[in-house]
Amino acid sequence: MRFSTIRRGTRVGRGCGRIRRTWLNWTISPPGGHPLICPFNNSGSATPLDCGNQRLFLPTITAPPNPQLYPGALQVQNLDFKQGRVQQFNVNIEHQLPGSVVLTAGYAGSRSSRILAGQVNLNVGSPGACGGVVPGYTLGCGPGGAAFAPKWGSPTFLFPLTMNSNNDVGRAHYDSLQIKAETKSARHGLYALLGYTYSRTFDSGLPDGLGSSPGATYFPLPGYQKLDWGLSQLNLNHQFTASVTYDLPFGKGKQFGTDWNGPVNAILGNWEVDVIERITSGFPLFMVDSFSPNGVNPSGVNFAWNGNSFNRPDQVGDPNRGGPEGGRTDCPAQVHTLENWFNPCAFAHAASGNWGTQTAPRSMVRTLSIRISHSSSISRFPTKA
Image (cartoon, rainbow, N blue to C red; front, side):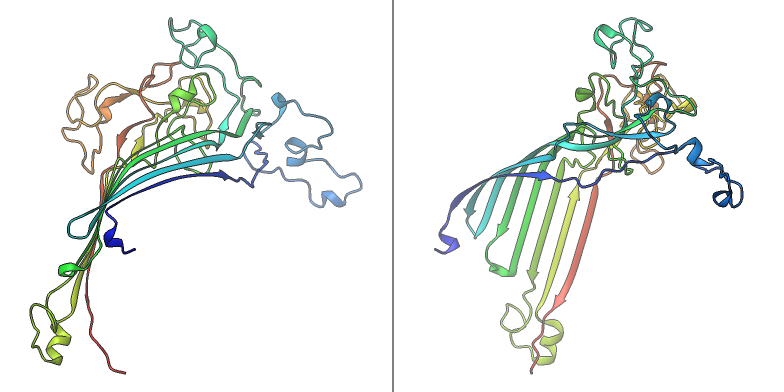
């Protein structure tokens, strides 16, 4: 059956896969990271000294150690750790329009669960505002707004009690509407493929411990599932792509230049123009408050992600609008410029003991849109063997 006789078609698909993890890194991070120097030729001495990192930080372990007396960072993993799972769905409807143009409209989506979220400190307590310190404050608190201390003890300089997690709590959703139009003949020397996608990608933050920034996440404190759920750093609301090839009507056998001689036809004939255009909206920008005196942000929670202790700022105005915001007047008159992409006056430090922006998502600003253009001209000419 020839394609041109098919006027409408439907395709439905579903896929399911697992994300395999093959690494687990157990490390010990001594404070300062500098070994103490043993006396010269200590190991060959009649009575060798037990010194340096071996004595202070790497003693021989003969019994389960007390985490509260362990100098360094621990790598921990939940006992019921499961492999990640991804389910994908798609449905497409095709219809042939006059002029041999095929229009395709479809939905594509995915649901991911049990995704690795790593290197986030588990040994954290409630925000300082809990326990009635700030009347009515409950975000990140225990039942009834109760305060609680870190389970394995509060950190000190020599005993930071950081428990870097490797767990499977990550989640992600993707939904998209996809539209495509394609010419199925070279009529008039023109081929075109146009595509547009509107999509939304959400996840729970997915810190990986490798430098990818998920913003300021509130895992593992109560309520983190809702508070950390937001636009993914991979989210693109709009994507448009166009690919066009046009054979110019010049040369032998074409509309113009049919009687050209060989040299003229080789120079001016058989040219084609190719254009590829890609336009996307901006990516989300995660706003964090890095003000952390003594290494802990003013909320009092030592999140300790990738060596940072971030909080979210309070959003007190519109970051995408220039001029006075949040009661301040020293604000840029214009935004979305190289000097001021957003209005910093729209953000402020959270009150001491509080989490910032209690009802706003992790991402409140976007990067600039992206436009990439490619064009080329190609000449084809026959050669004789």
